Length: 496
Image 1 (tube, rainbow, N blue to C red):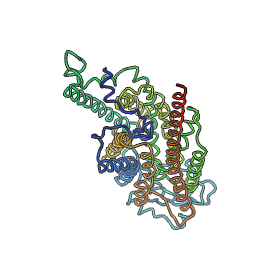
Image 2: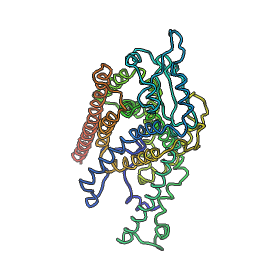
Image 3: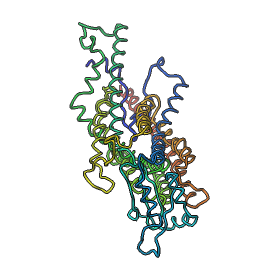
Image 4: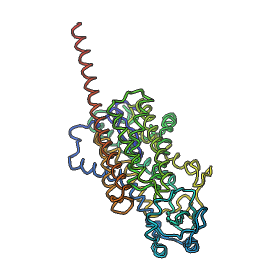
């Protein structure tokens, strides 16, 4: 492949962010000629679109869950009968009498009307310690939700059946791979046509590599080099597992809780960089990390009650997602910077095949609900596409859009702007939309609600301070390096 064409197509290397998008290594926007600079309106639209897609996947996951419960089909008679048969409650050790079942918000309306919650149960369930092992459940392969009852209190929770995350993300990664192959083809084709038209390169006999019909396939060939694919396979596998863990966490948590807990990556990733790259962190950065940690702890303490008895598994998925995303970013930093002559889109096309495969393999590698391993697809109609609906395609589309727009935002803006948008996205649309839709359990008049709000505000303020502080520190470091370079040059001049 001609080095001349690679120089023309070259863009700075980048890495995936936690949602499968991209972040630039440096804090400077990628270079463009003055004539190619987009207008302010188009940049504003791009930034807003990136903010929307970055924050909307978790919101659409909750739209899907609500739709699954409302669908109440195709045949949920067995689950309805089980609930109504046991409406007087289940025997419980230490209790004088079983507590009658009372429905929670989010259950199908016909069932909720028959299981109205008494007023005293609202306070009682917050006083009762909650354990997931204290629950019994009933599901049916033909029903779009399953009934889960907390035996000590009789609290009924209607949990939606969900699609297998690995299948959806594998399909999304494959679609993204096709798009990047297509982009590489057309970008090479158009660039070479311009060079031929300008007389910068010769065609046909003088430079056979640029002759039709293979003009656009040169970058495609670079995407299929075995050694390069194997080198990037570790990065792709980490990003694939991280994406699946992210979807599982979004399925178990509310959008606001997921967005806030995911900010723990601000704590984990710098520590990884400190250990692996041996780069010292400023004292102020450690202060910001401690503030964010305290905010997350306060937020979590406010949620320790029966309404969130299933959040423990969600926190585990968040921790695994943050760990995988952090490791993937560090490994990508090491690998991608070793080969900066390759265009950015070729590097991505070398990562996506292993990401798609890793997402698919999680179907069997991640333990099942009862910790059975190896796992398998649930015994539900549809096989790999069980419990898919229109909303599943919407989720896949938005996650793919987040991947593409993250790359576009990283190309047009510096990493500070992208990081600030990620923090802003926690407030709007995530928290605002989630609260208006009733997905957040936030009662500001209660002490738990006030603690939850305080923890969330502390995390957001700490995240803003962390991002801006790191940006100023990077600028200071660059200025110091420039001063040192000029001082060294002036010393050389004096010697001569």
